Length: 428
Image 1: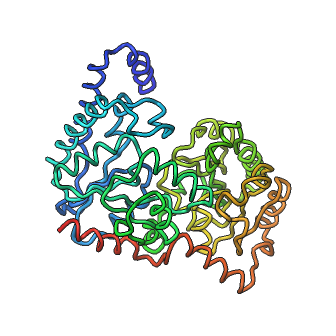
Image 2: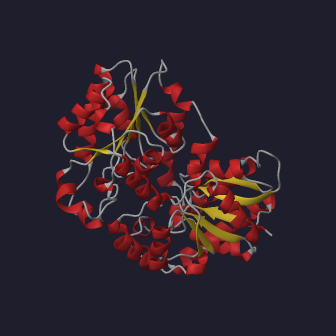
Image 3: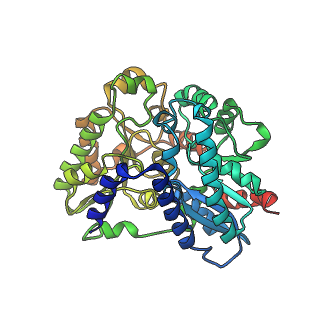
């Protein structure tokens, strides 16, 4: 029935006049606002957080709250109709946000004002929090929040900044969607410099660390067990979209990670068959577009493909072995001293990008796989009980900790407490 409803929506949407569509999206947003749960402890909400795929950071914030309430809003649901007001190039951050027809922006701001009033009437919050303000759907909403005297802050969820991003991405954000919030909380000193490069004033940036790292100290979940018929030792693979982390010019040339990803998962499938006494979980990125295809190809009793953003911390905590490419999860795994394999054999990566992406190939205390065959050999040794590949010297362990702190800035279990202390000056 749900599939039929989705099909009918897809067929009918192009036939409906724009004003009718606008009303339908508004009605759906109003309906959603009525159903948003209040804070669990009943505290008066001081913060509304727009959740755009940073579930773990917000869960950590909820667990650490002291006397303030926090309301979590599903941003994709609330702003589902925003695409009507913007061209594709603006939505995909190819052209400046301000290149949009001013009449369209004014219309969308009116729509945001209606949604904000409903939300504010329910919760009367003092702070609006989002994971980023570069998104086309949030920028007018932030402007409306200011009309109501609400402070707008960014709790940045992308703290691992590659050398390429330091220049190219910073310049792109500065030119196409410059910072419009009141304050931003970041993971590290290098991230502070990144946002200063974009044009954010130093007094608007506070280094606090990675919020979700608190969960490693406070939370031990067992949600992953539901994906398998038997609880067994766990191997986790952090997957990615085909164009993830690639410079735009590489994407324009048709370069992708599809081959690297397929080779990695093909080996994992062989390992799952050879080692039925282990469970293997492929964790797709929340915005990865081939999730359905991967599930269809790789699922078996002891091999699962899972999407979403909620279980990454649990995987890092509970996995016996962690496999990945360019992902923060590997740095988090290094923080917890987990065995890590970095799949760094792609020819284009080795030839052109080793100095453009996160320098995990230089990290100590992890294992680099230089080919699919090398990757399989290392995994088979580990799964057979030979841990010699993961025995590191004291000097390598020290260097690993230095590497982690460069990106996560003192992961001590109290990051969210620091954020709440900072927010108190805006809440009053």
